Length: 301
Image (tube, rainbow, N blue to C red; front, side, top):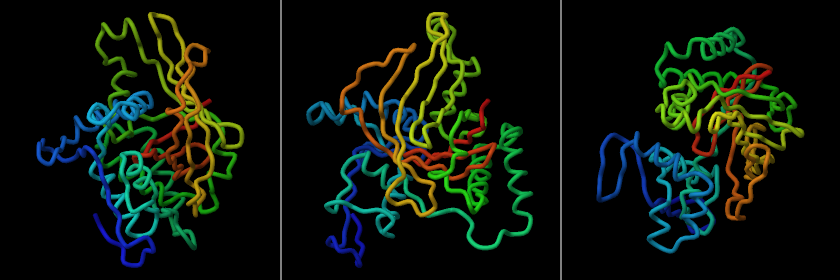
């Protein structure tokens, strides 16, 4: 619980996360998972089907399937509400989804005013390093370079209005700093268990943005029982209400397609989350999902 003296809603906001993870230790009271295992559990339980299952089950059963939230996300949500960057409806952020949405908003990172000397050269150096030499650096160093690249975003670029965002974007997993994408990278590079590869072999993943920055197809190419096919997640995009730099979208789930067939899904899966394109040019983009983690994207063919 924390207060904001100048607010008109009573001057306080209560955050009520169910499970929190972060750090290196395991605690029972209060419950706390270490960062590594917590990130894997969040990636699994945070999937649309399991979120919907958690919502539909009563009381303790529903809580058992609720994904944990990273302690850093809780901290960002507190800061964003306290500084007025986002609202706290009814003085409460009760669910993980509410906390993640509040944590996703960021102050504009774009440079304002005259272009500093050497900015263009530094921008090009960062892009080449991230796209060709990321494996030479630690995840923390890559993360720092991504954040520097975001600050060097071309001043006149607004991804919500820019046709440059349309097209195919390939994920560069060498740069990814989080646990979930690191696990996916292991699968794509053929490091998964042999028995699993005989059933399901991951071949690649990319994003297709179209219809004037209004739709996304997240395409996961796999071999299922030796047959090549695609699993496609369909979402829609619309500019977020709080969007001073033109970088923030609301992304809404619209369906799943497997082997060319649209699969049925319950209405409870149709959820929205923030998606920010914090950097964009003709070759590269940086996207931040609802958890705030950055993804380095390369323009595909």
